[in-house]
Structure formats: structure tokens, C-alpha cells
Amino acid sequence: MWNLEELSARYLHQAEDAERYLAEVRGKLKRNRSYEHVFDEHIARFYVYNYLHGRTFLQTREELLRELEAMKYGAPPVGPEVFDRERFERHYRMYLEGEIKTIFEKT
Image (cartoon, rainbow, N blue to C red; front, side, top):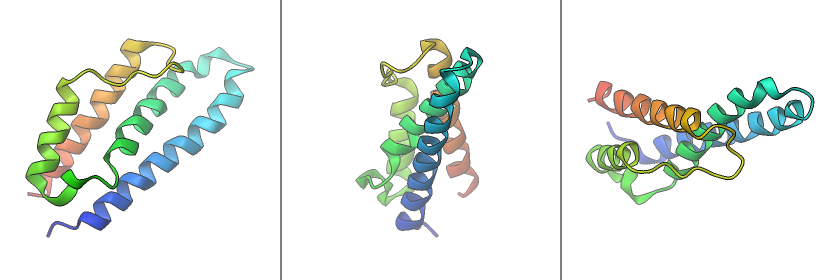
């Protein structure tokens, strides 16, 4: 059964978790640049899940899948904090593909 509120809450939790992790990594970046790859992955995660929660396209599985596909094939919103654009885009699409797979598995 499709549960809009549960799905939106899950996406919000993912965005908040990514945001907390980013705050932690920002401090570590000041001392060690090796955290740049971790930062790019989690900022991609934040961008995906922060966009998804609370949206009208969560009303149905079909609407969500259309939106996820559009996001996957569209240009990702790369922010100024990203260290490596290609790495960010890889992770961004990886999170989208994971969501698409999850939605199909629940069918």
C-alpha cells in the first residue's frame, strides 16, 4: 500500500541525516582534504532527498517514478561547495537509481 506520509518522512530523515554528516565532515575538511570524496557523496545524498520530501509527486508511485527518471536524466543541481563535479554527479545518480529500484521492488 502506498503511504505518502511515510515516504516523505523517510526522505526527510535521509536529508537531515546527510546534513548532519556534512556538518561533521566540514570540520574534518579543514584538517584533512581526504574527506572531499565523502563530502561530495553526502552533499549529493542531501540534494536528492531534500528535494524529494514533501512534494506533490509523492501522491502516486507513477508520479514519483516519473520525477525520479527526470532527475536522473536531467542536469544535477551542483552547488558551489562540491569539490569534484563528476564525483558528485555519480553519487547523485546512484541515489536516484537506488530510489527507483526501491520503488520497483515494492510493486
